[in-house]
Amino acid sequence: MRIVLLGPPGAGKGTQAKMIARDLGISVLSTGDIIRLAIKNQTPWGKKAEKFVESGGLVPDEVVIGIVKEKIDQDDLWSGFILDGFPRTIKQAEALEAMLGERNLSLDAVLYFAVDKEEVIKRLSSRRVCENCQATYNLLSNPPLQEGICDRCGGKLVQRDDDKPEVIRQRLETYEKETKPLIDFYQKRNLLYVIPSNGPIEEVYNKVKEVLEEVTAR
Ligand code: AMP
Image (cartoon, rainbow, N blue to C red; front, side, top):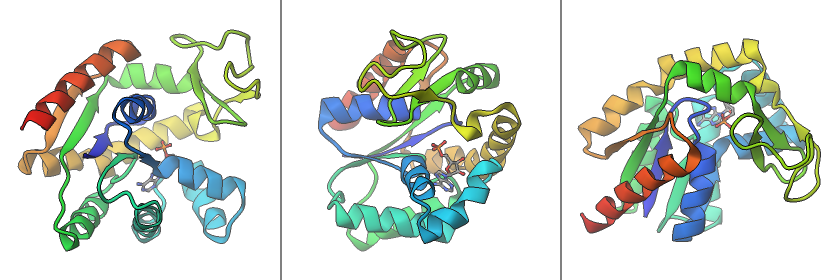
């Protein structure tokens, strides 16, 4: 199954992606994770990407499209993937469609995680990530057992630089302008499934499961 996860930052895409991957045995490709790793390792393009991420903007389309194609090829994921954070612009969506078209493939579903702006701001401000294994927590809804320490690996929990208030505001603006038009793009292609996502993780995931069963039966 080839699935795209769409929605504003903080909608829970990463969390839900991991749950779908665990249950369906499909790999997750998160452009945010790939970009963060490249920045951490200060690779040549990681250095260039840094300023876009830090300011709450988007890394240029050509770079991200190249990364996604290379990663799907490298890991041989054409038969199944969950894309978390890609596409984020119409240009990226068209490039994805073209890549799939060249292989006579298409997407099975686009899950749109619909969540209120207030909820998003609350979630992003209280998100913490393990420096070591990248596990994510939420201080309000999904706190670690011991403050500041990762339950899984004992690593230190930190706040992502782009989860600071000034950057959150800019990321939401970028989302409205660049990414929201994808809702219409995928609706027109009959691929869009809306997942109400203001509630807790398990409630959202139950809806995801329902939708994926419907997609499988289609
Ligand atoms: P995320 O973890 O998905 O919130 O991504 C973190 C940051 O990485 C975003 O705010 C962007 O700066 C960058 N990024 C991730 N995915 C993309 C993409 N598909 N296109 C452009 N920039 C991206």
